Picture (cartoon, rainbow, N blue to C red):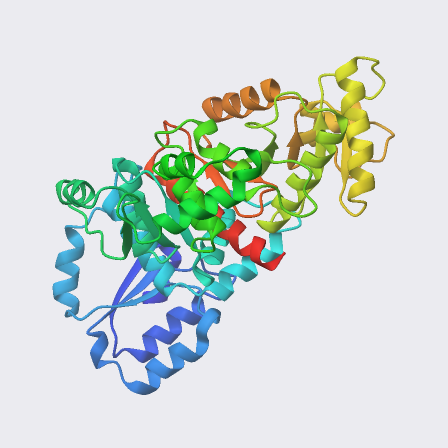
Length: 457
C-alpha cells in the first residue's frame, strides 16, 4: 500500500516507525527504481529503538542511499501531530530555517556522493548550487585562518559567527572587546568560536610595527610612521598575514577598495610568476557559473596585461572546479582595425602562448562567446572551442568589466561573488560597502580556498 501511495504522490515525506525494517527497505529499494519517483525523505520515529542490524545495514549502504533518512525520538502519533504545525517552505527571509537546513545538510549528507555528482558535470556546466557546495566542502576540509578587520560592523559580526559555527574558517575579528560583545548581545548571537583581537592592546603589536618598518624602510618607512599605520586594522591584518599568523584577509564592508588593497600591494606583493594583481567576479547565473575579469583593479590594461588577466582568471576558474574556456570580449570581431579590438587580439595571442593547454580566443562579441545559437551564425564554418561555450569572459578595460558585471547582476538578480583578487602571495579580498552577510560568508570561503592554494603553490 505504501508503494502504491508513493506512485500517486511522488515527492512525499514518509513517516514510519523505525522498527518496520521490511517497509524501510522496500521504500529505499523503490527509490532506486526508474519506475517510481523517490520520496522526498523518510522520517523514522522512535529511532533509538531501531535494532542494531538495521542500523548497521543503513550505515553500510552509505552513498548508495540517496533518499534522506532522518531519525527522531518521538512516537509516530506525536510526530504526525507536530508535523501538522510545520510550514514546509523557506523564503529568502527565513534566516533561521535556512541556517538550520545548511547545518543539517553539511553534517549529514554524504559529501562523496555529492562530489561524484559534481564531477560528472564539471566538463559541461557548473551550476551555482554545485559551485557553492564545492567551495563549502573545500573550505571545511582544510580550515584556514581568515582575518576580518571590521568587527565594529554588524554584518561582519553576523558573518563571523556563521563561519565559526559552520566550521568554514578559523576567524579572527578585530575591534574593541566591550563594543563587539555588546553588539553581539544586542543581536542575540554568541561569539563563541570567534577570536576577538584589539590591535591597540594585542601582544604582537610591537613585533608587527618592527616588521612593517623592516619591510618598508627602503621606501622611506620610519618606526614612528609604522606605529601609526599599525593602528589601521587593514595594516594590522596584513601584517598578521605577512608574519605567518593568518592565511588571508577580507575587508571592505566599511573601507574603500584602496584602503583594503593598499597594504596588501605594499607588503604581501605579487606571487611568484604573477606579473600583476587583477580581479574576477563569479557570476552565479541560474544555470551556470561564469567568471568575469577584470572588474575592479586594472583601469586600462594593455595587451600583455590582458594576457596575464586571462591566464590568471583561467587558473582561478580551474581552482574552483570550473573547466575554463576563455573569451576576450570586444564589440567587434577580429577583422576590425579598431585599437581596442587589436589590443584584445594581441592579448589573446599572448595568453595562448602563456597557457597553451587552455582554450583562449578573442576578440569575440559577448553574445557570440556565451550563446551557442548566436555563435553558430556568426562563426559559421569556423572551428572554435570557445564560441558559444565561454565561461571566462575578459573585458577590455575596467569601464566595460565593472559595468557589465553590475548590469548582469541587477538585470538577472544573480549572486555576484567578488571581487576576488588574484596574483597576490596571500589572498586579500575586497567587499562592497553594500555587502550582505551572505556576501561576506561567501567571500571568506573563497578566500580560504585561495589561501590553501597559495600554500600548495
